[in-house]
Image (cartoon, rainbow, N blue to C red; front, side, top):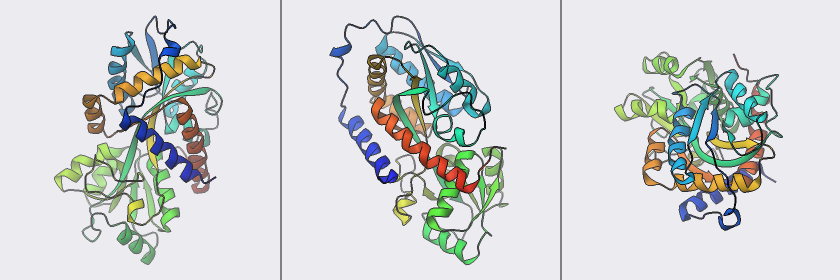
Length: 330
């Protein structure tokens, strides 16, 4: 089966569920006492970072309908591995969850020699929360907005002369997949942080950068940066008028970051399904949706089975790209 088609079907199904307000039945779980005390969600990144902000917004909304506090615990370090390992070893009693990402649950096993957990066997999917597409941007006057075809043409005409700033591992994966899919020989310039790559692209030291919508959007709005293409399969309401890379001729291109909730393997299915339903309700709230879009997250719900299938596909895709491009963590 084509992994790209599989992923697309999963995304389409999840979008349809969220749009139609389809909810999982609650009556089967009506007699359960869960939750009868606060729920702990470990965010494997520092307080104030994107994943932390997102989970706090979702947690506040979920707590209202669960009638129990959702307590966020930050355990940062090793690219998210420390926090993920803590959840993998936690009791599967429905009171400890991981706010995982494409890094902790798909990419890191191909980047780190010793994770301290197995992303394929240590977790049960609970609920997808949202996608974080990236955007290819430029300050070069001769690379027009929505100009993927022009970018590819320029790259082929002068191979490895167009520098692209990459401030994260995710950006490096997006870059590697784009170079392969578009047959566009661009040259990568690695940075340790978004602020550094943005400074260089805005200052004209490099002509292109791949970064999150959150980092790029203010500069796009001010006219200092031009968006060449967004990395999700289709355009996003977060960047109106910006076409996706796929919509501009690189068929099927779809490489995005994502955030989702996971439970330690063996957590009772009635708990994960009930928690997923409350997450779905939260994501349907207009005010929360607005806040997520403002932070650069495209809300998207998937239930436990959908999420498990999605992550399996993502692990294969991220792993193949990381291995082929020999991407390393500095």
